Amino acid sequence: MEKTNKPIHQITLGAIRASIWKNENKGVVHFDTTFSRLYLAGNTWKSADSFGRNDLLSLAKVVDQAHSWICQQLPAAKPATPAGSKAWKPVLP
Image (cartoon, rainbow, N blue to C red; front, side):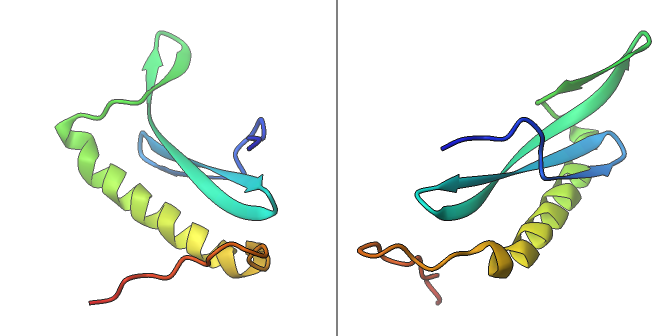
């Protein structure tokens, strides 16, 4: 599995950012997401992967937006299921 150097899409809400990476493994496209909190240290923007209480609502909203964006990409990005593998099926109540 190879990750590109830059995310394919980013979503930022306040100081919270989701970076979405497109990956392909054995012909199957999938998306990975990383989350970070941006902060200013002197004159330099930095990022952290920890979140405080006041960040959690924004983080939840960014997670929701990232999920929606990925779901919109899947029909176009999803190739045929490779021969011999089982397609994922959701378990419904």
